[in-house]
Amino acid sequence: MPSRLSATATEPAVDPSRHRAAARPTAPTQWFGLTEASALLGVSPATLRRWSDAGRIKTFTTPGGHRRYSHAALQRMLPADRDRRPSVIRLGVTPERVTRAYRRLARRPAATETPWLIALDDEQRRGFRDRGRRLAASLVTFLDAETEASRQAQLREASAEAADYGRVTAELGLSLGQAVEGFLRFRSPFIDELAGVARRRGLDAVEATELLQSAERVMDQLLVATMTGHSVTLVGPPHVDVDAGAVAGPDAGAEPGASARAAAGADAEARADARLDAGPETEAHATARSAEPR
View 1 (cartoon, rainbow, N blue to C red):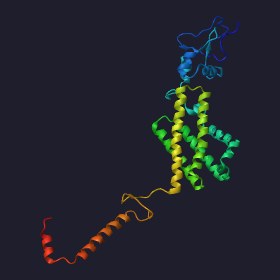
View 2: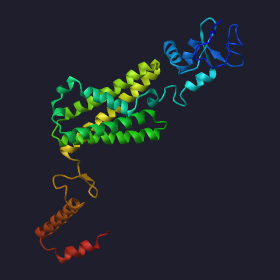
View 3: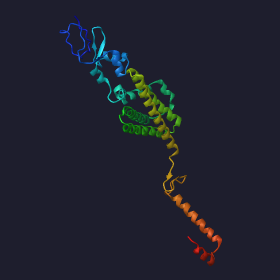
View 4: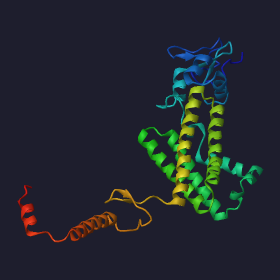
C-alpha cells in the first residue's frame, strides 16, 4: 500500500513500512493547517503552497491529502525582529540584482530618449555606473537596518552619493531638469524591483506597503540631495562671516571680520570729523563737561 506522506515530509519522521495505517502527526507537536499556517507567516495560502512544493518549508500530508505544518517549521520561516517583513536581501533584492536591472534598461531602445546619456564618454559612463552601484548598496542596507543610528548612517552615505551625482551633472553642463531625469532613471528600476519581489515572495499588503513607502520616502530625500548638489555647484555656497555674523557679498574672500572692523573705523572717523567741524572747545565748556556726573 503506497505511503500517503508527501515527498518533502520529514516532520515527524514516519517509516511507511511500519505505519501502513493512516499516518498522522504525533503528539505533543503542534500542527497547523494551510490557512492557519499562512496567516501566521503573513503570506497567502497559495504562496505557502508554492513554498511547500519547492521544499522551502517542511510539511506533512494527511491521508485525506491536507497539508500540515509544525510549529517549529513555521518558526524557522519567521524573520527575527523584523515586524514580520523579511529583509530585503533575504527577499532577493541585492545591489547586484539591481545593477542587472539597470543594464537591461540601458539595452532597451528607450535609452535613445535621453540624448545626453548617449553623449557621455566611456569614463563618464563608468563613473555614473559606479555611483549607481554604491547608491543601490546604501539603499539596500538602509532598508534592512535594524537600528535608527544605522539607518541614519546609510542615509547620510546615500545622500552624499546623490549630491555628488548632482554636482557632476552640473559640471558636465547639464540642466537641473536633465539631472532629475537621470535620477528618475535610477529610481524607477529600484522601486520596480522591490515591487516585483514583493509579489513573487508573497508579502502581504501591510508588508509590501511598508517596504515600498520606505523606499519612496528615501528616494524623495535623495532627489532633494541631487537637486541641491546641482544648484550649489552652479551658484556656489554663501560665505558666512563668522565674526560679523552676516553673509558676505562679492568680496567674500576678505579677511574674516574685516568688514566689521572697517565699519567701526569709518564710524570713529566720522565722529572725529564732526568734532573738527564744531570748532575748538573752550576751556569753560571743557571744565563744565568734566564736572558733569558720570
